[in-house]
Length: 201
Ligand code: GRF
Image (cartoon, rainbow, N blue to C red; front, side, top):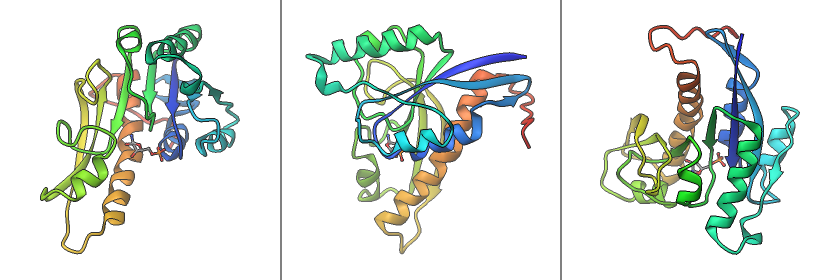
């Protein structure tokens, strides 16, 4: 059996981290076992750290505030990731802008709560809700030098209904996020577009 290793980077609540671990960690898809071998968080009090413990996983804390520049922080991330020899890095609510130091060396995907290229940046949920767009959605894309600008891998939309509140909008987004991020990881690591068999169900 093949084993494919992932690292997950997150910053706070960690609902996507938990959804991803639940769906893929130590699970076999099409003869490929996916294993999460590294978790990194840049905030020492992030709730996601507790969520990871439910899976028996410890999180490495690398606080960006302890570095003099973005590049130095990114170089530390790269060092930790390279030491684990992972196949894919997943940014699941990792709220840091990454420099070329990271993006030129690491293959990573990111989750973004809008239909890119619309509503880039950290206020995507509010910006999209308060726009006149009649659909909202989620994108998963490769990480590049440009913030939220790398090649799009998967997108999913939902329709706005008349009475939707900001909370409803956000809930829809998170529901989709929890589905499509694991799907992308599985597809990238076990690529056989014709037939992906989930051997865990
Ligand atoms: C998600 O909406 C993600 O798209 C954005 O940050 C949020 C993280 O949520 N980048 P969580 O920490 O996974 O609950």
